[in-house]
Image (cartoon, rainbow, N blue to C red):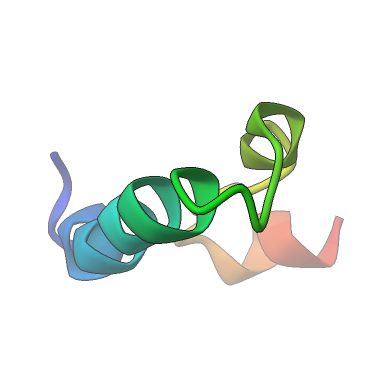
Length: 44
């Protein structure tokens, strides 16, 4: 795992372990979340 993506690993675990398990989001919501470390790709 890249260092930048590792930075967000705790948040992504929390989203899955808390929000998804408590049904505050749907499994489909996880498909729209992206970890993007390159600012040029974010602007696209």
